[in-house]
Image (cartoon, rainbow, N blue to C red; front, side):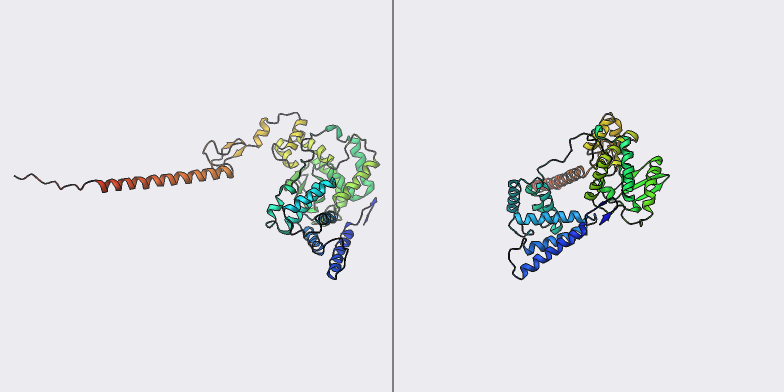
Amino acid sequence: MALSGGYIMDYKKQLEQYLFYLDKEMKNQKYGAKHTLIDSHNAKLIREFAQNYRSLPTEPGDHKILVLCNRLKSIAKMLNNKHLDQLDEEDLKMLNRVLKDRKFKSAYDYRKTLKKFLKIKDKKKYFELIDSDYLKSVMGKANSEKPVDPNEFWDPEHIDAYLTASKNYSPRQLAWASIWLTSGARPHEILGLRKNDLSIRNERLVINVREGKTGSRMIVLEPQETIQIMEYLKPYLQKLDDSEKLFDIGWTQQNNIHKRICKKIKLPENKSQKLYIARKMCLTKFYNTYGLAKAAAMAGHTPGAKAMRHYIALKETELLGEELHSITKKMCPNCKAENSANETQCYSCKSPLNKQAFTQILNQNLNDKINAHLDIIKKDFMIKMMEINQPIAQPITSPSK
């Protein structure tokens, strides 16, 4: 599959060849062939996984499916071809030992792949296995503590050079570059966009991110930005149907094109070539231009998130200032009074503000009612006992004359 400006490997064809290889392995063992590389039952399981994973709503690319299938095949070999749908805790221990002995740098990815396989196979059946410590990451989240470094941002001349090189590469790449450098969306979110996810309202371009790391959200660009981005997008959009994907390409291919263009424009070494650099530059602008609530909504950040704090720090504002406090207030569903974020019960009417508080109040009320009911029964019992023990009263008669 060739694109203008470069050659992209046809992963779809590779995946079909791999699935054909699995079918061949299954047939060979059926007729008693020896020295096969993978057990026929595992070959069948991996083939089913590929088909089920391909049909997910997120529409994973062929390259990703191919990588996951190869990892599953390697896992099966590490476990001496034990059936992947019959694993237990001891097998996970063995897998971790093998990964450690062979010094696999991507050990976390192999555990993550096996976790995906078990979830798709039968989440309920393998719930305890999926939640096992042996399938959990021993690594922290990458860059979770690393603050944003403005020195790695691109200068205006680098952005102009990138757009010019993208225009010479292909119309698709120019459309990608315009959204990538303006929207602040994550690269995989951009790759998931369809034509009908873009619309213009009040001279502003609205980008609806349907599926992302933080769920669906809306990015609204200013009129001036809309004019610039539509100049690059319009010629490309005219060729697409409304429900068609904007970029029918995988993350790896897009990253390769990006690196090729960075090399062509001779981007300085101190400037980041990572695909997330455009998002960082856009979010810095968001947090310095818009109100905190709007910027966080467009960025897909939850209030108080570590990533959000880095951008607020760039703006040199107080992290727990009034503006941040105002968007983290909770409104009581009962009396509509505003409560601070850490409150569990409304200060005004004492209504619960979260599920845990609701459960506590419910249990307390239930206990109070039970105790009150027991008190009533106890009192009734005591009264009846007193009536039984009391001597029978004699009738009052008038004295005899």
